Structures are given as structure tokens and as C-alpha cells.
Image 1 (cartoon, rainbow, N blue to C red):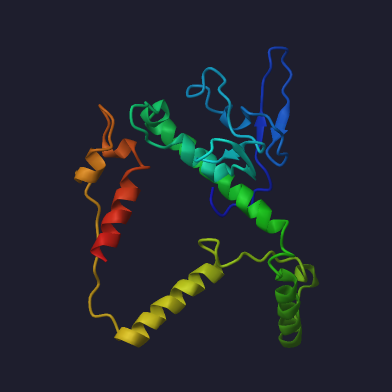
Image 2: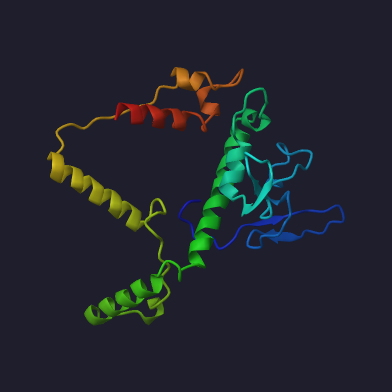
Length: 225
């Protein structure tokens, strides 16, 4: 779950010889079906999944480039709606929801792991030393176990204190420029909007397509703003 301190996510595979190997996602091994193993009902033929060696393709020339496809871009490609091509993954309803959530947690875990092991690039050491000096000078009960072990998350990571602080500063800028707000306006989503109904597959309801409803709501909200 979001916010839970999980170091890694592992998959146990029961083989026909009764052995149960454990594969950790800490190792970016080129096992193409690793990310799709937990959902055999969707990938019943053992289709290839994501691996770190997938190269990006130039859309103009059709040739591979030196850049690699990220986990987020790969699953965005898998969930894309295309003309004259049936994306069967979108038909699995609740199982599709579980698949989306599972892939989302993998993407977030990979992002957090990158930030954890690239603190030098974020210049977090300067912040940590400054924090230790301030706390050490003002708090006689300083816990030495907390010195120098903090991991700094940048403001670009949604939900972090720095990210929320930026939103607060932006809100105060609006107040300073336009004055205090006078109205409290709510904006709700209607599942019967044409934008939502047009993207539903035969036999589906809006509750089956959580990839469509938030997108339609966001676009409606931006047009309202």
C-alpha cells in the first residue's frame, strides 16, 4: 500500500518439480514475464512482459534508439486504446483494476528506489547536515541514531512535504493577488458524460473503466477552470 515502508517485492514461483524459487524485483533481470506472472488469467499464454532492455523506437525512421523504455511508458503503451485493435486487457473489469494497481505500485517502488540511491544528485547531504546542526543546537534530546540517515524526496515527487509546500505557496500567491476566496465550489463527475460513455466497450459500465473516468473528469475540470 502507498506509504508502507517496503524494501522490495518478491514473487514466488511453484515449479512442477515442487521447488519454489523466489524472484525479487530488486534485480533488474531481463526476465520478460516477471511482471505478468501474478496474473495468469490475463496472460495465459505467457506473453512477454516488461524488461529493462526494451529499446525506444524512433516513430519516424522505425529504428531502435539508444534510449530504453521506462516502466511507466511501457504500461501506458499496454493500456492504450487504438483504432481497429482490440485491447483485451481493458475487458477484465475488477481483475484489470488489480493489474493497474499492481503495476502502479511497481512504478512507484522503482521511482522511490531511484531516489534512494541517487541522493548525491539531489544534494540531500547538504540538507541533512544543516538539519543535524539546527536540531543539535536546539534540542538537548537529539537522537544520534537519526543523524545523517534521512532520504530527501524532491518537490517533483507528488505527495511529499516539499511538493505540498509548493502547492501552499501557489495558493497564497493567488490570495495575495486576488484576495481571499468568497466561494467554495465543488465539481463532481457524471458517469453518463458522453466522453465516458463513448470509450466504454460493449457491456461495460463506468465502474469498469477507472482509466477513462478520471481522465474525462480532469479534462472537464480544466475546461471549467
